[in-house]
Length: 360
Image (cartoon, rainbow, N blue to C red; front, side):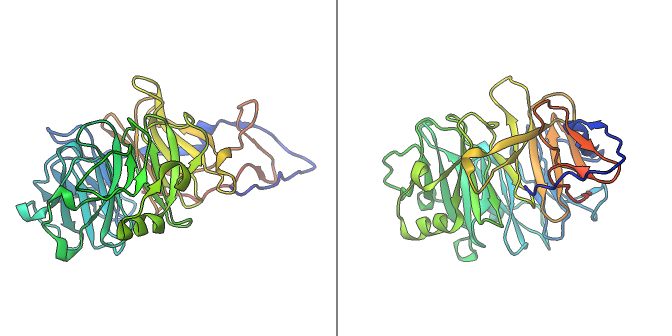
């Protein structure tokens, strides 16, 4: 992060602001409730900055920017939502059903209710994102439940309707096993757990997480694409860059990369442990020094959270126990040994980088 020097004035008044007060959240009163067959609601941002949510049956688009109002645009997309991924050109969404396995395609500009032709493929998964316009990266569980792997599926128009799992190409394997149907391109540790994936568009890297070893690593996006195209084998330890140390971060993985490169890591350290959303500085010049700036808990429950980042409006959406909160403004606090927060002077602010205001 940018470090801003302390402004010293002849006359100053000092007071303390806690890290929790530094981020201003507001509830989304009209956030859709999960469908009867769903555990949670997932979402993303469209290219114009409007939010899109999927509750396990219906897809909702935000009516316009900066309003707490959402309209149903398509229905019948059944399942427990895992993720929504937007194509790089902003024209299509892929809805990932999660454990059930269906991957649905939905047009952004002409959304329609579900038909069987909406299904692109079927493969149980946890999260997904686009590496290119047509190549979708997913974190999935292996059929024998011995671990997880990252796989790539070509969802281009000429591959529409391709539902054969044998056509999927693993690019990060967690762990390595023999598999006649798939090309192994990246080894991962044994007995790993699935976690969120996130793309940093500035560094052009993809963050992945091993929920068992609690390791956060990033890979060069183009290296993952090349691995798919050439069938070469990458290695989790040597090709992936370790961020921080094992056990530093919540086990759900990176849910979003903010405009300044800060990571949003939701979840908890383990089952039935206090949770929230960690704001992490990855210290790209020396990733081993990555650290948690603060933990967000807008519901004040220390519950398990999911997080959505809107790169257009710079807003952070925190979801916990069926309730959603969105940032109105966020300020990065100066981490002090005393944990007291920020010291402010009458002539300036002494803190690590003030972020711009963000709205719905």
